[in-house]
Image (cartoon, rainbow, N blue to C red; front, side, top):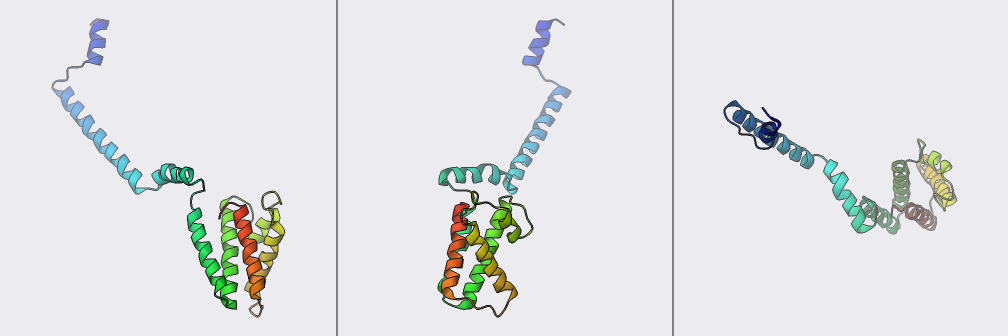
Length: 171
């Protein structure tokens, strides 16, 4: 065989007999594997994370998931507007939990929110002192069942949490 015949066979093979059967089997397996890849991309969240979430962040100029946080925040504000002390206490506990979750997802170290707040600086969270005071009030609510909470104080605490979440670009 000459080099021209080898190149001709590679570029334009004439499949006959067992080579034709092999070609058909490879084509069938390729289609099955391609179908499996498409199925796996649809059923897993990888495609959503890599393409759809990035596209949503790009088009809305906001991080993915902020709309869910905003919805939860509206529920917290509605609890506060009820004017009932127990609802205001629950709103503060939920706001504290939300801030804790966001700081955890952002990668700030610590096991509790108190530890995370101690590690933050004024640069990362400008109202750090207000957030620490709000967290202390939350701890008083949780650990002391007889703790009395004024509604004005509750509004200040919720506004401190709101400012902290806004500064962290979560709202």
